[in-house]
Structures are given as structure tokens and as C-alpha cells.
Length: 457
Ligand code: ARG
Picture: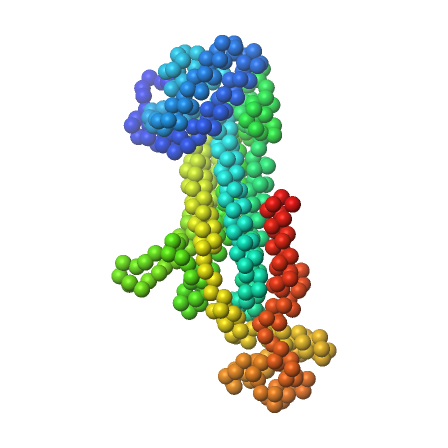
């Protein structure tokens, strides 16, 4: 395809290091779509005759059918998907195939193909995220009033509800969804027609090809068009953020599934056994989501490092943009599917959660708040009084509600039996009615809003 100025063929290792076809064959549909738009535009502009356009387009349709049926042939000497398509086209329709590459280069071609591919990838992730959000909302809806400990420092802090906790992940994945949508909006400009780097002297119409390929318009600088990979980095950045959220949730499942916690029982379908310990039932799906998320973040780092030292315009280093994006996408899809299935089928052991929520003096803040509200004590002083009450309860080996009244009165006159008895986890949760708080009324409202949003309301 480019041998005119060469006397010898490439060394075997040159062929091998140069070839991207083993991985960029995944772009075959986008490559053919891009070529069909390009050739149609060349026809419209009178750059190619209508007979040539018809022959090339029919040939491309046939290549597409062949690849769909038999897969993409991998011949390292054809380097990449662009040459592979063009060479098969030439076999099918003869020398007229050579007119397809008028007014374009592989540099703008690959930039276009890859944008189209990433755009599809974003749409797939969006569908999966929507499903995950629905499952989270459904499970949260079942558990608006199921009490569990809320943690800080992984120490019992204050009671919350499982519905509230699950909805926290709804918020994260909902933001991820909007990050992918942002990436898609920014990506949606077409580099095709920038040619090698400087544009072309042919009377092309880049607006036409952009529209045919579903872009909002052409990119505005030919040098940037062939050397920009921000769109892939935006995708990887959103994927990394999403993977990070999946990993945190996975980590919680690992903790919750452990015997000391026992907050969740994962179904057989998402657990594995041990080859030596017959009793074992391990949360491998969650661990693998946690593990894979590291690899996804690694893919983001990898492409950042590939790009950061490159002068304008195209350099062959940029061929290495595809493997990390493909890998991250495959891993993310796997993780989203596994996580969705796991949440859908998990059995939450609400009685264990409730029991744990009542440990660790989790309602101490409620008592301090009561002193502030009902006895007009400044919060810092209330904090000190309750600290002493906790210390005394710890010494007695009892919970705050069971603190002997005499002991409480000795700490502070203003403490009384009624308030101590009222320190239940249920009352604590019900009282947290501030916007975004854990009170079941607030969580239910947020669930309703989330449902309406998912229904497009
Ligand atoms: N296969 C290349 C890539 O994926 C595109 C070809 C650009 N080749 C060139 N000699 N400029 O980036």
C-alpha cells in the first residue's frame, strides 16, 4: 500500500511490531461505515464519478457481509484494519478500489473509526448503568426502613438504613452516567477529512460526512483532528471513576459477607468454594470486581502516558491507544453485569444489621442533640456530658438506654430516664429528616425521584 519508495520489504519483526490488525480488527464496522460515508461525499462533490462510487460502495457492502460471516482475516502484512478492508475491496472490485483513499489518510480514518467505536461503547455502558440504577432503586425500596450501622473509620457511627446506603451508590453511578454522557457530547465531532494532518486541496464537504456518521459536525483543526485522543481519555476517565465506585461497593460486599459481619448472604451463583476447605463460600465476584477496577484505572494511566509526550501531529505511538480502551471496556462491562446480578440476588440479613446498629453507642449523638434541643445545653458541653455517659455505660457493661438513672444523674442532672429509654436506633433514624438524611421519609422521596428520573419523568 505504501511500498513505492522502498526497495526492500520490512523485517519480520518490523511487520510484527507495526501491525495493529490483531486488535484493531474490532473497528471493522466503524471503518466500513466511515468509508461508505467518505465515498458518498466524494461522489456528491463530483470528486469521483457516480459509477466509481457505486462500485466502491457495493464492494464495501460485500466486505462487510463477508467479515460479518467469517470474521476479519488477520494478515500482519496488511498492518491494520484500514488496509485489510481496502485490500479485500481491491480483490473484489479491482483497481477502482484505489480511488477510495482520495482526500483522506489513515490518520483521520483511524481517528474517525475510533470515535465511532468509543461512542458505541458509551451507549452500551449507559444501558448497563441504567440497569444497575434500577436494581439499586428496587433493592433500596425494599429496605427504606431496614436499619444498619452507618460507619466512619469502619467504626459504628450512627444508625442509617440499608435503603439509604444503597441509594448512596445510586448517586455515584448516576453521576458516572452523566460523566459518560458528557464524554459522548464532547466526542461527537468528526475528524474525517482532516487527511494526514493539514487538510486537503480536494473540494470535500466535511459537514456531509460528519452528518452521515451521526456527528454534530466536523472537528475544527486538522492537526488536532488527527492527534487528539481526549475522547478516548474521557471515556477511560469516566470508566475509571465508575470502576472506582464499583470497587468500593464490591469491598463493602466482601466485608458484609464475612462471618463477623454477616450482613449479606450472596447466592451460590455469585460465590465460589475452596478446593481444600469444604465449608468455604467466598465472595469472588465482588473480589474480582475490586481487582478488575484496578486494571481499568491502569488502562487510563497507560493511555495518559502514551499521549503525554507526543508532538503534533500523528505519531505511531498513538496506535497503542486501542488496547487499553478495549480492555477497559470489556472489563467494565463484565464488572457492571456481575455487580448488577450480585445486588439483584443478594439476601440482606436485616436482623444482623439492626443488631450491629445498636452496638457501639450509636445513638450517643442523639442524646447530645436532645440536651441541646430540650435543655438548651451548648453542643460542645452536651458532647462532653454524653462522652461521660458512654464512659460510664462502658464501665457498667451496658448500653446507653440501660444506664442506671442514678449514674446518669451523677453525670448531669439534666439527663432523665425518659430520654435514655427513647434512645432507640429506630428513633435515631426517623429523626434524621434533613434533606438527604437517612430518615425513611426522606429516602422514600429520593427513591421516588430516582424512579421518575429513570422513567424519563
Ligand atoms: N493503524 C494506525 C493506528 O491505529 C493508523 C495508521 C496510521 N499510519 C500511518 N502511517 N500514519 O493508529
